[in-house]
Amino acid sequence: MNQTKPTLIFDMDGVILDTEQLVRRCWNEIAPEFHADAIDAVFLTTVGTTRVHTCSILRERYGADFPAEEFNNAVSRRYHVIDDAEGVPVKTGARELLQWARDNAYTIGLASSTRQAVVEKELSERGLLPYFDYVLGGDRIARSKPAPDIYETACRALHAVPADTYAIEDSYNGIRAAHAAGMRPIMVPDLLPPTQEMYTLAAHIFPNLTAFHEFLKRQSTHSLPR
Image (cartoon, rainbow, N blue to C red; front, side, top):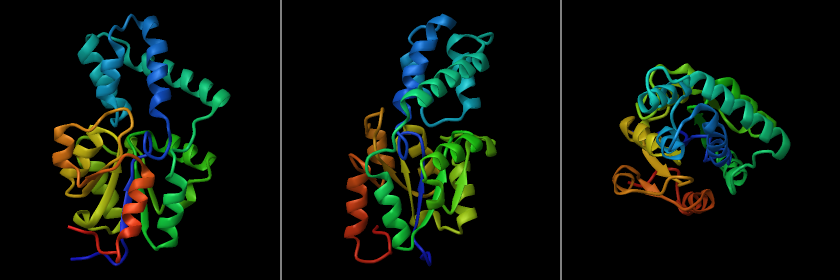
């Protein structure tokens, strides 16, 4: 069974926007206030997950009484201070890929672990929101990536056949979620390097969005290769 229109569903952080480096910086700057040691290793395990799941990871690492919400709020405040002062760039090749996909009749979705309001704000401020036919934030889904829920919901909303739909991700949790949803995961690494697990789960791994864009352009039809 083939889709009438080919579909791409993107993650946002670390894929469309170069946010993960800034979040990592904020975690490391805030951690001493909360006496949280080895914070960088903990941060990397949270990449691609929701705020709620992140709180669970923090409490598991630092104890049930760790003020995870306060920590996340402090990180968020620091993030927005830096964002306002320095800005967060769009990832190289993202705007060009989105424009090409729109011009070539792709359906374009976004499935992010970030909260819906934040996703829409971040994309709107950079003029990217109009490219997307459907946007879904992590606070609208009960289970965080690596569970498949967010991708299953996005595919239903877009009337997309999961097996014929590319999910573009940078994180291990995102690739796991897309694979579990029966999609064709594309890994474009950001902070996390590909592992053997990722080579097993991903349909393809590309060094950047430009390389993925070139791959799509080489396809002679809209039928996705097996």
